[in-house]
Length: 243
Image (cartoon, rainbow, N blue to C red):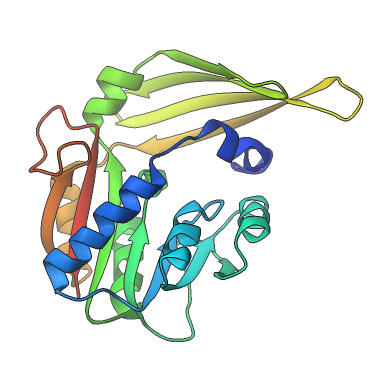
């Protein structure tokens, strides 16, 4: 089963990410690092469109790209202002260029090789207007090894539940989690579904090298919580790069 297929039905219910806080922070970064706010924003690996929807409500023209048709179905149901395209982030195509690209909620961690990192960043450079910015985040190795580690997580709602069994391979720097979902059917019974997700713990050095290889200039990195320089205990890091 493809990831984010059945998960798409309950993603917004279970994944309560701080999208509004991230959007406000990204606006501050646009102002700080470019001096102007963009007009046209690409939300890469947009998922159910939560970030796209927020930026659209803020008055930006938005495009959302994701490889999962089920996630895009959810996105279109809650946001008709964004142009949503079903494409793989490793080979996406646009009709023209954009002012800014964002890729949020550790989507970059799903890219498992350095070569594909360079491939994605090169596409971002190609589709950015001159001076345009790419802002993305990653989960850190610290988060995978010390926070998620080999732990299990669960969450129960009235009509759905999940169990997340996590395993982190420190040698390969690969994080695997087996997600088991129980979704209530119309007859009151529950259907069980499983998805296996794999993410890579990229180092800051690897990210910086990939950005440079793609022809992008790294402007700054930020700890998610403090909005200051990342530390060895940062769990999520934001990167700001410019064409």
